[in-house]
Image (cartoon, rainbow, N blue to C red):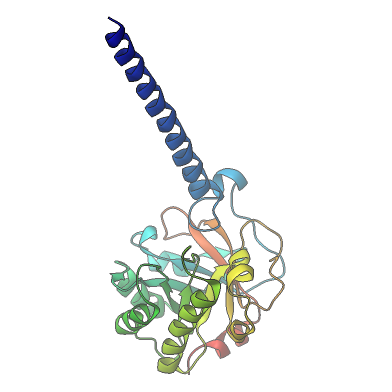
Length: 262
């Protein structure tokens, strides 16, 4: 009888331990999910906390960035769209990710953007799962920029935890140098302002034009020079179902044209 009681007690203790661990795991998943979908600085996360898109004052050159998440775009309708009574001048288009992923809508989006009179750009989404060299050559294999296009863009938002900042910066520079050698222009670096300050603050990165993501603020908190500002992920335009990121260019239309590849 005593042996059965001890066995039963141990089973209850084990069961209680698993319930406790399960509760911790579920709480961690919930916290991560809440941060990822509602607090994180990229993607479709901020609307629940901050509401609809707001428009920074003092900028006239408006643009958007798109990927397969926007689905099939009606480019004729988009061409007539306005952002704060200003026409959409440029479109940044997701091209590649890592060393194997081509955005399923890239080729059509890239073609249609030029056909409908937009200044277009193509960006690569950095992955920590493949080398900088592999990613650079994959981007160059899949993307053929032409005269009048914006310089190539590196979208970088994550640093591996097991890689030092110095090694990470060396990897980023590898991608930038390989792509720069092909097009003979400095690639644009897309990132959010805190990431820039934490991991890309070495002086060598100041030579590159920046596209800063900072949502729902009246001005960019990043103190350095920047060319583009992604200020919301809650934009609405004719021809696009759902939300789209809005961007501004920090300069005149003439300056924007000068930035393009010759």
